[in-house]
Each structure stands twice: as structure tokens, then as C-alpha cells.
Image (cartoon, rainbow, N blue to C red; front, side, top):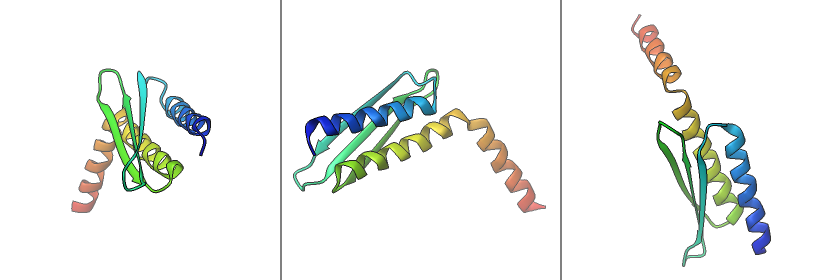
Length: 99
């Protein structure tokens, strides 16, 4: 894949993550090709007054590694944005299970 194609894919991933949550401060995407020929994608997103979500994924394909890391990062951001809802649902489940 050409360098401009890789840059376009990274730009798409950044925009997708920023659209998913409007209060994200920044998104960093780091891509490396390892000696084994695999690609390692590392995505960092920072939520203000919360935490930084980091996802690292490896794959033989550049696009697959990038999209796997994107999906993992979006899941982490979703969990960080709604921690109270998760706790309530876990408590409700444990109460229903005990009853």
C-alpha cells in the first residue's frame, strides 16, 4: 500500500473515533512494521477528567491491524463514558440472579 493510502486510512480512523465521542481531547495513532512482517497499530485517546484509552493490536495486514485497534479503542471509550450505567446493570444482574 502506498504511503498516501496509509495516511488516508489513519485519517479515517481518527475521524471515526472523534465522531464517536465529541469530548475526546486528542487521538494518537502509531503504526510500526515489525521484523516479522506484521504491523502493530497503537491508538491512544484521552478523555478529559477521566483516563487515557490505549489499544495495541498486531496483524499481517496493515488495514486489519488498524481496524482491530480502532474497534478495541471504541469499546474502551464507550466503557469510560458510561461507567455508572455499567455498574447499575451489573448490580441489577447480581440481584436478579440471587433472587
